[in-house]
Figure (tube, one colour):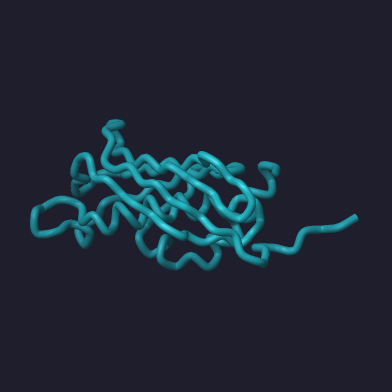
Length: 143
């Protein structure tokens, strides 16, 4: 698949992705099987231990995973995801999630996502299993 397919798929998804938009996420990069998103850690994301709530970190990783596995203009959903937290995110951090395709065979895919802070420290690692279903993000032109 091409870079333009990945970009058009991301544009179509982003238009309706109110959850990622509401959290202040931004797509930095997208390509076939790859996506990089960032999210600032704001006041409302800090928990009782004064660090970024893990659910927000998971959501950032999940969004990067979604844009990576949907980069082929095929509707693709998470089938299973797991996260490991390595260090806390802090108020004011700019977290960056980089999703990379490990393998894609038939309707199943496997993706790894690394979430880092602006200093490059590993905050969380995430592994997502995807499942492709019928449908596309946009109608492809046929010749």
